[in-house]
Image (cartoon, helix red, strand yellow):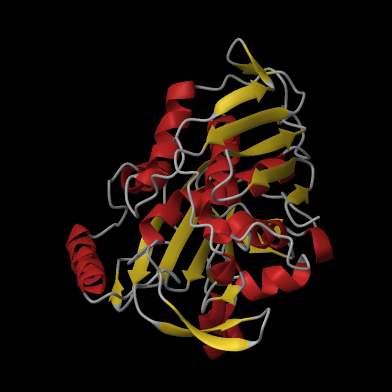
Length: 359
């Protein structure tokens, strides 16, 4: 099922862009876990702080699964009310397949019966329930010392400083996560904002790259072949709209290396822990965590919402038409940062449930 993800934890998302609400059900969470509502709200607010995400209330209504501020162990269900349920009702535009949108593929998949208003079930508004599920998982993980954070590595041609793949720490993760515009180098951040403003003025949109790191993930999490830790992360990451690429560790740069460069040499540190001197493997070898920071980068295409006339097709009568978006999103990368964190947190917690004495 396309909107149902199942591992040790299951996540099911529902709703459409202009429906009354969107929501999520998360099952198999450990019971008795304290969930801080204020921390949940802070995590959710990061998705709305930039990028124009204002269509749904940021704090969800929790229907089940939390009682007296603790998880019950039964399905956690929450929904977020849409504040904007109005959408143009024009039969001629309902059949229009627009560049960059999932109009045509969605119509083919669902035989034309899908809700097309604002993208329907394909809308980026569905990242709100994903963020809620990931925020809950983050609290459970952080209580056990596992922290995940992300930053904007690149927007268009402007690049931020990357994480140190070997020495990234909890404080390093949290310091960037607390920023309004999550970059390591603030000067680069201002350059990115200038480019976003130029794109807005020019009726364009920009893509980019988000880098994510998880620290204090113990060695031995995951499985080989089809249930690898990176497999699970990838499945959730590609559930975020506009994701076009994903790499772990050195990623595609490893194709330019020779074996002696790419191999991460092991050593024993002063505390008796087995580590590697470099981290080209991104904290995962053979689908299983190595104890090094888990590092990954996610590429996003530019938003499809630009106020420019573009060629489109009416697939009902097979005629050529012109489509112009009333909505303009010059850059969705900043609001996607917590979405990437959420996906990684869900994947990590799902695998951590197999770890001895985790709960």
